[in-house]
Amino acid sequence: MSEILTSAATPASARLTGRTLVDVRGLSIGFADVNGGGPLVRGVDLTIHAGECVALVGESGSGKSLTARSLIGLAGTHARIDAQRFEIDGRAALEFRERDWRAVRGGFAGLVMQDALVSLDPLRTVGREIGETLARHAKRQSRAQRAAAVHAVMRDVGIPEPERRAAQYAHELSGGQRQRIVIARAIASEPALIVCDEPVSALDVYVQAQVLDLLGELQARLGTALLFISHDLDVVQHVSDRVLVLKDGRAVETGATAEVFSAPQADYTKRLLRSAPTLQTQRRAA
Ligand SMILES: Nc1ncnc2c1ncn2[C@@H]1O[C@H](COP(=O)(O)OP(=O)(O)OP(=O)(O)O)[C@@H](O)[C@H]1O
Ligand SMILES: [Mg+2]
Image (tube, rainbow, N blue to C red; front, side):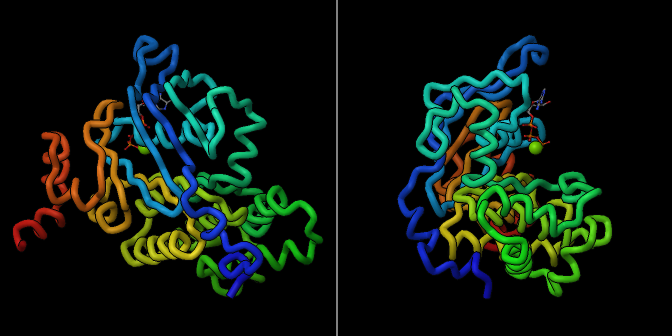
């Protein structure tokens, strides 16, 4: 087993327990040249504690990605972000400069997006890609130590023969392996939070299940929190503790996933749930 999942000195879960990672009230996000400058995300409240999985659901264009990206400084250079409270890792982040956000992304938070081929650099080996995150996180490692750490993280995400694979480029790997590399890169710095924006949408169902298991394992063993975005409500029901339902940039419903899915309050949530085929079958069977 690798250093990452077994790091004995201070287990991450112990280090993180009880921490409020994200505390946002009245979040609004807009762009001067879009929607007449009006906000695309409006009045959203979002709290994420260590170790929990919070899901964002809602139809396409409802503001899920924008909301999630704003928490790691990636809403876009021209994004206008406003909030009554906007605390990331206990710090008021509205005043953050790019340098502060880079530090957030280098250690506190990792990002896993849908399309691994786009988010991986075609000109760098996947080993170097992961190594770079490690270099930012653990600055004083020798080259040999870093290579060993890269292989360890790759093994953690279920990539066999990491010594050989580390020397390959993204296009030489399968879609599922690429997504594992993206996850490996995201967890290399042992972040407290991983933002997963449709992390399994591009994968076949078998690989989907493996990647979801892996994320669940990180959550359980390291106390990693997940902000999870997916159109697949079946998956959301399975993996998340709490859910936020977005419509036109507003949160129309929020609560424990089990409660929202079994007794939705908002009409929009009811419609959204009705449109999920497997959930419907479960309901009928129940
Ligand atoms: N960088 C940007 N510049 C201008 N407008 C943007 C930008 N990012 C998002 N938007 C707009 O904000 C709205 C919300 O987009 P967002 O990407 O958050 O939707 P989403 O809920 O993630 O949708 P999907 O399920 O299709 O991914 C959309 O109208 C989109 O066009
Ligand atoms: Mg999106």
